[in-house]
Picture (tube, rainbow, N blue to C red):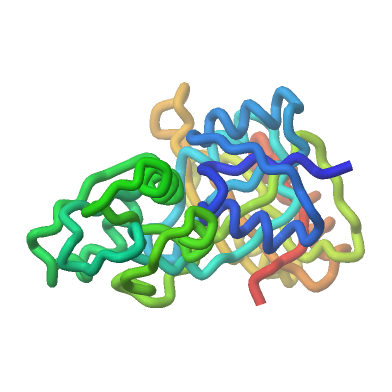
Length: 274
């Protein structure tokens, strides 16, 4: 039986590329244009897994997605890193001088802003999804309009790549997480965890938690604070930690659960960042 994987966007999107990388076997893709709908599909058990972008090396964290994972009690069971390469694609037979408008996701437009300074006559138009624009151009045979999208989108929708890698910063990496409604872990490959907790407004409270990580030989790879909606000026902390020894991690987890309020493990999985 095929796994059913929920992705944000459509086939040809960067979420789709990550799905192909992470799930080596054949999978059934379910497409959703919003992260809320993607999460609902997992909560309602219409899909077995979901792939969700969580942070970008240039733009930083996608804060609302942390809240979606936490509030819906989802489990991070894996991660994947993708080098984001933006390409300018359009119907074949056109040159850059034929293009009057470029449509894409606001983040893609922002990351390619320097490239378009050379073409001031091209109008940049925000859209919901990179691959969706490519599909629209292909299906409606839209001339004089280009998309910023992946090379996979160009391949799927039979479009021509006018310019490759047009992003301003050439090394542009996004971290995606693999989500499930229920936890499923294999102890042998576990060397990374994502946890969430709250702390009192007391001097040194965060430092004390960080000391626990150090004492237990854990490596802090990410820390993100998020305001608690119903409690002004109270923050939740989301942290990612890697470890070589699972027993040391269990010790740190036990101590942190005593020191911090509302301690919660969001996921234990294999570190894919080498």
